[in-house]
Length: 237
Ligand code: 13P
Image (cartoon, rainbow, N blue to C red; front, side, top):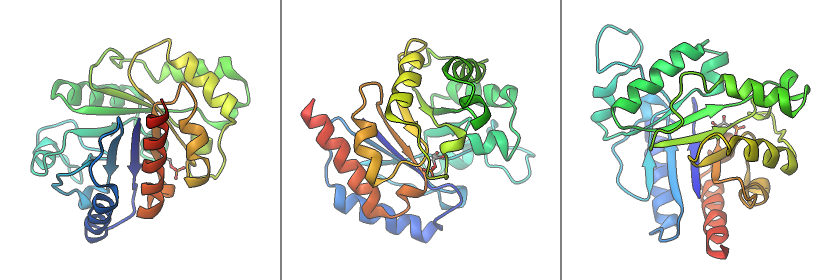
């Protein structure tokens, strides 16, 4: 099970350091099959050793160069970061990253051996058209993406479920995940309004290999509770 936190534009460097310190002391040594990932804001990236692996929410596909406002691989290497989110809906819809940009970014970080959490998700109007329309929309987000990549993790995050407090029904998650799992063998996470109160039922779904949590992870106690839940589920299996 993979339990990942996307801090988005929250938590400063100092707060992120405190969070990680507290999380490590709560978590202790993870022996179960549970992996923890933390994606802080760019200016809060930290060189960290522990059970939680720190990754980046974004980076420009370049080693370094003239890309004002962006960071490149050299900046990630400084912190030993080898994990990245690609294709997050906020980057697609707010920053207007196109599928072509996203596929280029994917290839760049793939060539450098990064773990890539590749995010996909449909808007509400597509969801309302049913499963077939949803899968068609999601398939278009796989254009140019190597689904055979060995360090790939996919995160299904319906756009309308992100930050809204709304989640698909368990049946809806299961049917989208089941269909997606016929397309690749990479682990498949669910994201979108995951919180302590629904994390267990979501992680217990057979087709869910973990969760990608935004606002529900900002309190370290809550994120720790979700890690504990993942441990319990792994122990039952
Ligand atoms: P929320 O958990 O805040 O809905 O965000 C989900 C998300 O976008 C994680 O990447």
